[in-house]
Image 1 (cartoon, helix red, strand yellow):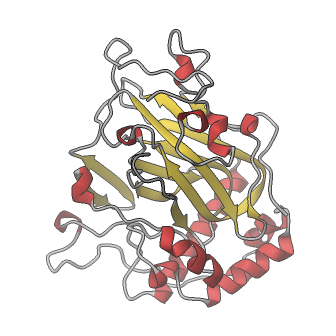
Image 2: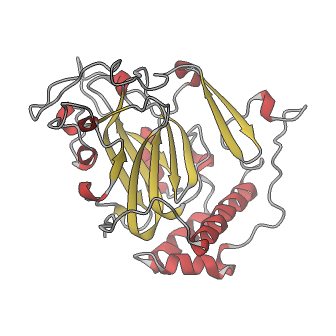
Length: 329
């Protein structure tokens, strides 16, 4: 059965000590599992020379004593509150018996195995080459047990909301609900576009759920009417725990050939998921965008040399308009 996003007011802060403890525990389990199933310690990106020792070895030793999933009551309590607790336990148990995702495919980022949480946050930190706007055409969230989540477009939000926030643009069609309308043909009438913030802060999409869920897969369709306005650098977190930080591929232009341009980010080692979505994993060459990645202890700092740069002021932002008909840039 498909999951639904919460209809209650979304929370922007997560103050529950129990929830944070559970998230930390689940993250530790993922790291322990990864350390047991690979020859190296957990690493988020391929490390630059400055992030490694003299011989190029990782600075992060593997955990000393991995904890089996079934032994900690906090993990059981976490899954007890999911929509299908028995299915969640079976999915996680089966996943821990299989090789990690990174053994099957390369995504440019070592994603955690079946992360759990309440609120998905997607930060769009840069566009491909536009300082004024950033957008997407479509988005799907899949969980490990229930499949594709049915998310009501009125029950999630974006900051900034859309280009309707700009003066004189209140009737523009490119609003956040278009991300979830299931029409991912790249047309402006079925896309979302928002102004980038002049102070350099990322555009953010929040998707809250009323129960914890186990993330299996995210699917993105990048902005296509003007591909340079598509999202490039994105950071994805589940209850404030980073689960992905990398690049979305630039969408192909609408003309002369229309083709599917979905990009999948996978958190599940289920063979059926890997077979179906593996072909949609797109690893972008960092040199195409101008990116340098450095690791500092357990945090990530990303320095960008390309992309759209900081957002433009309203006076410097080019005009754009789509009102119902679906035309525009």
